[in-house]
Length: 317
Ligand code: FAD
Image (tube, rainbow, N blue to C red; front, side):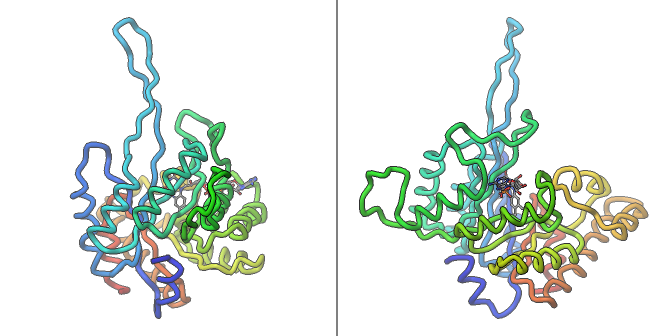
C-alpha cells in the first residue's frame, strides 16, 4: 500500500522506522532481532537505507596500489523484499542518484515494481568519502528532483526506451527528503525550499525530514513549506540521543544543531548510560509534543539500535 494511503487511513499519529542493511557477511536475522520488538507498535512501513560504494586501496607485493570499489552494506532491494515477506508491512527502499546511470536506476525501479514495492524515497545521496562533494555519474541523475521526474515518467508508462509502446505504468508513491535546519549545501533556507518545492511539483507525495532535536525547527519548517504551497505530509525524522560523542558527530555528519539545553544536560552526565536515559526522556517529550500537534508519523532512525526507540514508543503507542 502507498504511504499516502496509510496516512489518509490513519486516525492518529503512526509509528515507523528506518533500518540500515546488515554489513556484508552479517546475518539478516540480526536485523529481524532489532525489528521484532518494534513490531508491537504496528509500523505500517519500514524504510531501508541505501549505502554507496567506498574506495579502498589494496597494496600488492610489488608495491603497486590497486584501487577497489566495495559496497559494505549491499542488499537494500533484497532486504525490502525480505521485510515485506516476513512482516507483511510495506518496505520503502531509499534510491539514490549517486553511483548509478539513469539506465541502472530504471532497471532497479523495474525490479522493485515486480517485487510489489509501492513506495520509494528518492534521494540524491552524498559524495563518496574520497570526493569533496557529490559528483553525479556521467549519465546519471544530478539531483533528487531528476529522480522524482524519472519516477513520475515511469508512473505514466514512459520508460527511457522511447521505442517502447503501451508499456505498463508503474504506480510508485514517491517520498523525498526535507531539512528543517537546511541542507548543508544550500546557501539559505529559501533556496533549499525552492528545490524542495520542485521535487513536490514533479510528483513527490510526502516528505521525510532529517533528524532534529528541537521541535520548533520542525514546526517552523512545516510553516515555511505551507507558506510556499507545499501541501503534502511532512513526516518528522527522529533519533534518540545516545552518547556524549554525538554532541560532535551528529552536527558533523548530519549538519544539525544540538539544542543548548540538551547539550548542557548531556555534558553533565557521568557516563553514556546516563546520556542514553536522558536521550530517551528527551525523545519522549519531543514525541509527545509532536503527537499533540498532529504530526502524521513518528519516524525513527534506528541506526542498528532499537532499545531506546522501544522505550520511547512504549510511552506513546
Ligand atoms: P537534493 O534534493 O537533490 O538536494 C541536494 C542539494 O542541492 C540541496 O542543497 C538543494 O537545495 C540543492 N538543489 C536541489 N536541486 C537543485 C537544482 N536543480 N539546482 C541547484 N541546487 C539544487 N543518503 C544515502 O546515501 N542513503 C540513504 O539511504 C539516505 N537516506 C536519507 C533519508 C532521509 C530522510 C534524509 C533526510 C537523508 C537521507 N540521505 C541518504 C542523505 C541524502 O542523500 C543527503 O542529505 C544528500 O546530500 C541530499 O539528498 P537530497 O535527496 O536531499 O538532495
